[in-house]
Length: 187
Image (cartoon, rainbow, N blue to C red; front, side, top):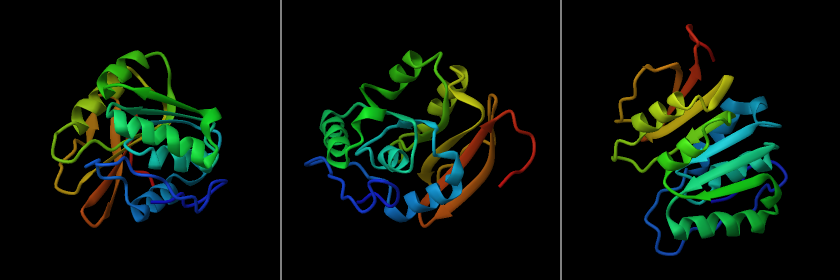
């Protein structure tokens, strides 16, 4: 697991010892950031179910103005903090060591340009997370919510104001892209 591009390019990231989580694969991360492209520099990015911090650190490396990481596993939180120090990107990062749904309530009133969520596969957390993001209006107008899930996980075309406008499959992984209030297809 490494940083693919930006100021921390090629830096290796640590995994929590004994952790059973599944970090976003480099090829999935590369596809994600190729799709997001110019949205990243200067953006406010929220990394939910952050695990190792792999995706949020990539966003920081590529020029995100601020990344908030949300992770409840204490070993993973320590690893996120260690990885941020290792790549020298602590100054634009905030790590919330708590349950994602509690964090979403506490973040109400803030808005993000990009929200990425990668809950543990098979636990059905994708839909409740989308509901909470929509309920607390956490994504800016024109912003994006990206859900990483198993290709077998069926996600709704619409969740409140969030409308799915794109999906991108890589092996067993599906990236589903949502925007608030859009009506047509976009790429």
